[in-house]
Image (cartoon, rainbow, N blue to C red):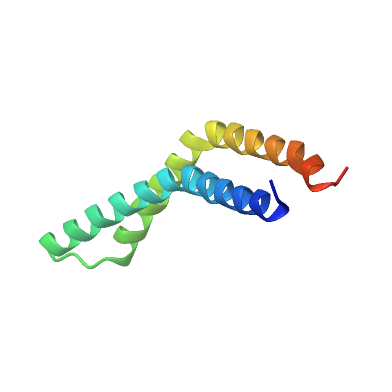
Length: 91
């Protein structure tokens, strides 16, 4: 297996890790944002803080809930990358 194949595999794994770690947080932000926007459109309430505060709280809550599994996942990925350094000829 050539060096370019290893690099492509690492890049692909990195993209998957980023999507797995950030996906749920972004999804929560999207759902809360759409819900608040729909509420504002239906009630004609155009308060700026009403759109920001619920999203911030939801994203912070989702981040706290996913923090431990995300750190474990990132730790496993980092250990795998460091183990592959010998394949690149680095020691």
